[in-house]
Image (cartoon, rainbow, N blue to C red; front, side):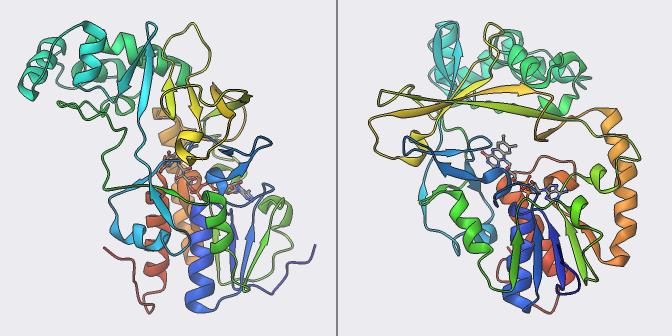
Length: 380
Ligand SMILES: Cc1cc2nc3c(=O)[nH]c(=O)nc-3n(C[C@H](O)[C@H](O)[C@H](O)COP(=O)(O)OP(=O)(O)OC[C@H]3O[C@@H](n4cnc5c(N)ncnc54)[C@H](O)[C@@H]3O)c2cc1C
């Protein structure tokens, strides 16, 4: 395959990070851009499709777009119309579905209390939680934040399933920000904009990459084509940082998910888009029912069970000291390549979980940092 010499910009990966840079370089600077994507589709982990029952489902798990970033919100509106979607999630505890994040409803439903005010909720939490000043692991972080009873019912086993590790062996950062509401607010998130693209996410990427100056090659990995790619001004790499360097400083660990899709001959399966299953009695962590998000009218429904696994696509960086040290070694090598016009962008290259809005923001910021002569309409 000849990909030599015809491109100014080469981008590895057609997810949010790569598509944003491709779109900016082509539309703002008229650059010829080559995007190499190893999967058979664009959109990275945001990719969605219509299944045989006519229901739109996300191939790599549900994506709830939410942001407080005005610039990102303006940017994403260039590629789609959006409608409000404020996700609510439940947790299936001892046969009852209770709202998460923990709020007054959750506590009353689980413990038969009759809490009504913020002051009462504060006092209840104060009596439940342990006074640990500096948590050494995730269990201690949870005990400090929500106390033993909520931790054991809702978080301990869920976290063990999710990470295949006891919370005692996980960094405190995994649990030290478990959201707890002192009021009745049962929204999953509190961001200003919580939206869903009216035609789904995949359409956004088709539009972002539709400029004739952009050539996208799917089913094309960097590894298989790097020797054929000729000179370029800049290379943006959005794959796993260790794979770029042939894993020669150690392999970074990722947790993955296996998705099991099932279509049922009934209109609805559950009350909410997402129900978590914290019990060890079932091997999956959550069930997602997409129609709540897509608002499609269909006499059938599709649900997806999520099973955490070590095999498969790299999704969640594992917060351990060992991985942190390996990543720092790669990061040094990566920074040294900036002088040659090679940049590492996105959640895989930074070994860091980014929400969608952060991924858009990082790529926009990088573009405007590297190309200061261009007018930045998306700064905050
Ligand atoms: C299960 C799951 C659920 C999520 N839910 C939410 C949510 O509800 N809300 C939210 O805001 N965010 C969510 N996210 C985060 C969101 O998916 C990311 O912010 C976003 O995908 C980051 O985009 P990216 O381009 O950096 O990475 P990716 O989407 O991973 O894109 C990287 C692309 O590079 C390609 N690639 C990698 N290596 C190579 C190579 N060597 N050669 C060629 N191509 C390569 C990959 O195939 C991939 O398509 C979720 C993430 C996961 C994993």
